[in-house]
Length: 431
Image 1 (tube, rainbow, N blue to C red):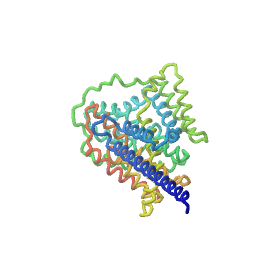
Image 2 (cartoon, rainbow, N blue to C red; image 1 turned 120 degrees about the vertical axis):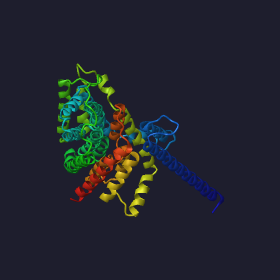
Image 3 (tube, helix red, strand yellow; image 1 turned 30 degrees about the horizontal axis):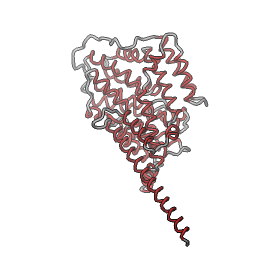
Image 4 (spheres, helix red, strand yellow; image 1 turned 60 degrees about the vertical axis):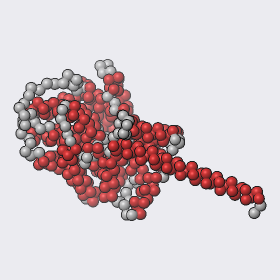
């Protein structure tokens, strides 16, 4: 080998070493940012900084782009626009109902059954579950919790069974449809799942789990349904929207038409955004007020996590982990394994981030895997407080009314409800 050939080989080797170092640094950087982001999302804060989960996820996405783990053009492409559009459109429709006073009116109508506490619990859970399946559970909990707190305090009843019932039933009910919660929307859009097939497969385990959850709450609080304090005069909060029949009917008509369109071949996101646009064309209701009710934090969380997950996907970290699990007989193709991993991750980092991480490993040709992930991640949200945003909303709204729902009180209902629900799901899979 001549001198020039040797020099060329040395330069080639140096270039390969340099590229290898660059790949290793990129891998370590992406992994480090991902771990910090998901750890922050799990904890809900970063010591010394006043950041919430959305802020932490956004900071992680910014770091992925700034440090080169995700090129800017790929960061933009990583965001699933169809999911964001569907989520945004449903928030507009829900804002129509909220400003029209429909949610407040519904909650107050149910309160006429307060003298029969067990029936009141059943009705409140049933309405919560049905509305969550159509309008997203987070929004239902946000609208119902303050009204329930007020009527329960006024009636002198122990609010815990009813508020816990609201949280668990909204989670369970939302598992039945593609539009029931944010993670289902993502699963439905990415997996190209048909609305009717999703509904027919996911509704039976949701119904069985709902019945079981009601019976567990009845049994756990069987000695606490009698009024614990003297009744007080009920005072309607001046900030609650006044019921407007026309505006509420418009919102109900929109969601009814939308569900019908979901059975057609028209893309869901186009149907939803078109109806949302029609609702914005109002002579009475200001579009500014409707847009103020959009959960921009949740939309930002989604977009940020898309970018963060893209960073580790480019580094092949998740693929290596899943391959390692498969070598030990823990592949996601095995339904109980997928159910267990989904449940565990949903309670480590909440169900939305967990689903965003797991969907990239599902088989696009096997809808069963997508159904299992949707139902298991939603049911798992009942296990602990952090498992679902709906849980956090109920607890925060209750605290504003002076009602404290501690970790122990939630776990006393959440743990058995989740375990029985997941058992029902596994039984349904093999049935």
